[in-house]
Image 1 (cartoon, rainbow, N blue to C red):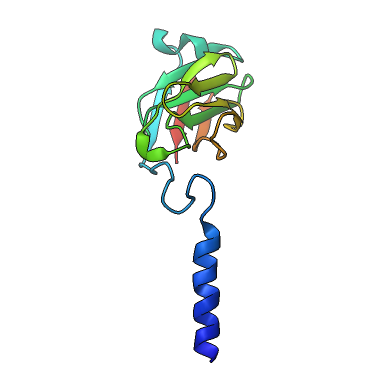
Image 2 (image 1 turned 90 degrees about the vertical axis):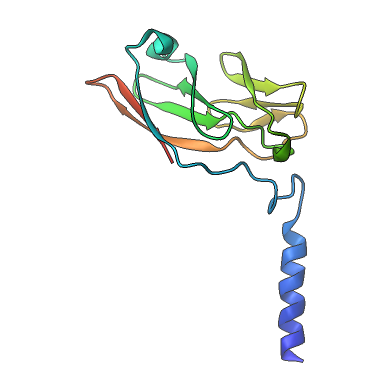
Length: 142
């Protein structure tokens, strides 16, 4: 009887974990990422001022980097979190919003990576950032 009780609780726990976007089987892949970009390069010129953004190669579908302040950055995988198996890639729309209207139909803000419109309910996969102001280098890693 005790084994049946624990088996029931285990199976119920597995069943209840599935929700919108299928949490267990529909997550953006975690790919090892550790890169450093030189903000002095012309490609990253938009990142020299707060509110600027740029795309960087890496992650699952690329990375969007956003400059929050003089010393803070955010970095998110461009892989849309809705129906991950479709491999939808978000694009920047305006200074703080990214979207993929044609594939996953969702919009995200790039300060925290949270969905603001569409069917996606999970935030974009975030990367850690470390800024070296003396060398003007930004490290992006997980």
